[in-house]
Length: 283
Ligand code: GUN
Image 1 (cartoon, rainbow, N blue to C red):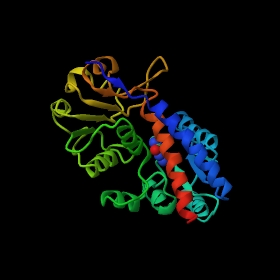
Image 2: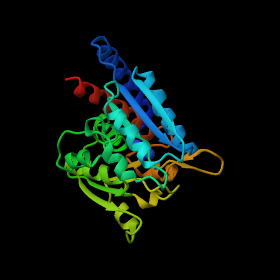
Image 3: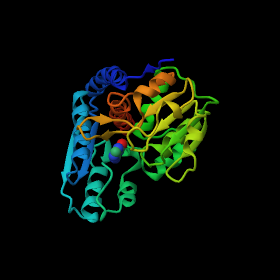
Image 4: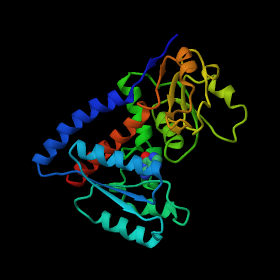
């Protein structure tokens, strides 16, 4: 079997085209969706991500404000900024890029963001609502993956999903969101024993461990759906995922590539959440 490759980039382009029209319609009604993206320090990978988010936002017609702060910013300065953005009526979505430097208490910053502007879906209120299966902002990478399943009509009900990784950004929320879709979910992580015994039983395998080539064809079941969330820069400077693409392609039924897979969907879902926030705050 050779898998169908799910190109997130193509799906993302279609969705962004529809969004551009929606934003133009909102602007006609006097609603200009605004996003504030905050980055602390000058980690090249994080800077490149947030500049991508800023550029994509502007391209669909959002008002995007990229705020770059020095590494030495204090907890209080960051809290004051979040407070100002919470009260700014032109800002509908706030994203503080993670990770933050060690001297910053990340949880306190996330909790300071107004849940009504939490377009990242990381606030405990958003997470609680997600756990309860209620309508809320969902974290962008998992929402992008869920959207891929829906667009490709990949059924989730009763499927055994194995999630590798338990991060706040991807692993934990994607498992919960797929549980909400009636999948059976197993979480594996760095302390899991005999991980490959789990991966070989997965109908759907979601890999978010940050290790190039962690999963290869022999680790997956015939016909499995393989979603590669890894973004690893290797020695020659190119990007690669957590899955050995060539060997997995032979066994899987669907597979996402890196790059051009999950990444573009993440940014698109940020735009989606921001438009939703603008609509809700103007109701
Ligand atoms: N760092 C890596 N991915 C993300 C994300 O989706 N949101 C934020 N805030 N930080 C990130």
